[in-house]
Length: 139
Image (cartoon, rainbow, N blue to C red; front, top):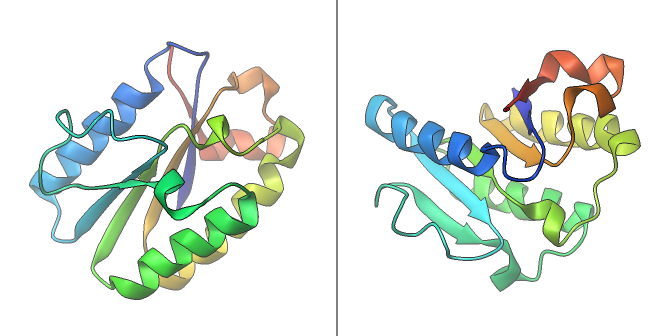
């Protein structure tokens, strides 16, 4: 399963992801990863959640992100959920290519049976109609 977390800048998307990761680590049986573009949230995430700075690994394009996430999943078969925060700061993601981003991530997600949550700076109105069922808007 892939879900886009939507909302304007400052709406609370990052907080939603952090709370989700922290809650899941308490109730889940698998591992949880939080991919970000800095280490700012190291003290807000529970220590069992693996914080990974994508910039440390040279992730700068969508294909690199797909490869990076695939590598994480290939290495850790117990990875249950991946929360991806703020990659739009280093990778340009446009509303018109959300469907292709979703399709690529869904392949990765299904293959490894891992849920992926990724935040983007769009409102629900800016998302293509076919993507709305795969989106959660934070206001």
